[in-house]
Image (cartoon, rainbow, N blue to C red; front, side):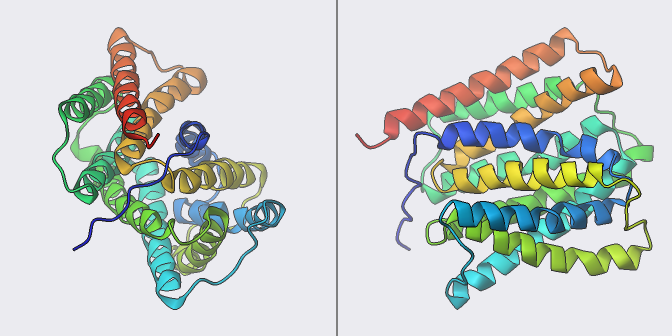
Length: 295
């Protein structure tokens, strides 16, 4: 099998990746305040984002078009993984602690990083191994105070972990198609397919579908889907999976900060140390990427 070309670097891609992760880290907070059921929150996140994405795509000179059949099928499968991820993760957020949901949901970070190493057909270098170890330890320290394993949280923990697996499938399929499809048309198609797939599930669960206050679901759509996923999908065409995976681990750190700001959760010295380890890991893989960039 021929080696697949690695993503080409772009000057703003890494910045887009970081900003996208900041937006995505707000997702659990917005889901809890959406005023609808967890699966319905996933539907509104996608459905309400569509008009904004279509307008942005046209303004950016990337209007919606239908790619060739094989790519359309791949995008539809990506949308299925993403819709299933949203349903599972949103349900898990309400059944376990925020720290647990963030920790287990970010299982995709390590799996996608491993995918990137397999794609490059090589074992991680010493720098990459150090970065992954630091990221894993930092994530564990960050969640030490907030994550709590117990039978009461088991269902939520399992749903969040399952969501992490599903999100890995979504990221891989998007990364595979980004070389041939522009980011905004790809995101529009994935969002459209995903909304159509998740709506029947939301209706079948019998949960509250229509919100009384629309502000929270609009905020969820704009923050998580338009900004968060939009910037992530853009970055996937330019940033290697290993860097994307480590960057996604900044979300637990940002969730801990949100917990401190909105719920009065205490930030300990271990939290600070864990966040610092993740930042150092991100710097290491970023320096490695820059060192390998074509001159």
